[in-house]
Length: 280
Image (cartoon, rainbow, N blue to C red; front, side, top):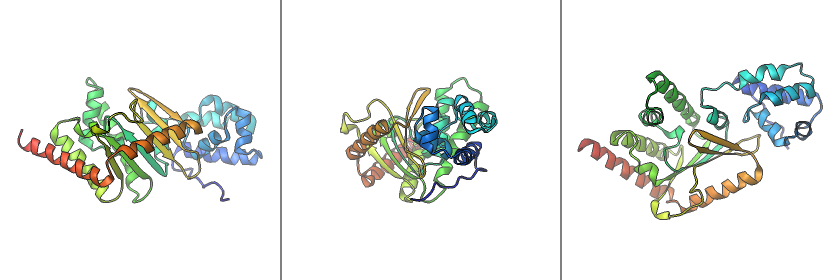
């Protein structure tokens, strides 16, 4: 069996912390499961800390320092590793997204963040925060657009989105903004960088009526599921829970239009918005 993938400690403070944890654990002759038992967590959780897909909270850092004899290293450094430009409820999911090998997402209301255009993202954030200053909105938009750089690699991560038809029909920012946003998705689809399906209204009741799903897989850590609500988010690593959400996502894909039919619908709706903008 191949060993764990080497991390690049220079890529982020969290990657550094994960690399140091792996080094200290192996030096102390602990397996991931063995260290997990000492901390009353699973071995997979330790693996996620080492892979940089989970945050190391201060309470764990203190215990790790005591168990591994690392003289306060993890306590001193976990605060810097946990700094993020993203909202607290989404920070851990965004950072996991950046190192995922595949991302599968069901979007019930809005275009997924990594697929959004600048004008669409700005309209979303302005709706969320109508009294915020332009500097605040600019920072939020910049952070969201930076997430799209995960698609710069031509093949990794695999990104598969199921968009509820409501995503296409909700006129965020007006017809011109929607035309641009949907054309952007169509271009990514046509160049085979993403796979997109549309769940039509006529599908009726489905497996995720209570909200969106984001599923992330990694080379050297167990998969994660992220569930988001208004101003809240929950990252799940319980295997049974993740499997339930994977089944829900598979059922959504089965109920959705085919990728070819979905692309045709996206381009048709984009053209309708463009025509509306030209002839208000």
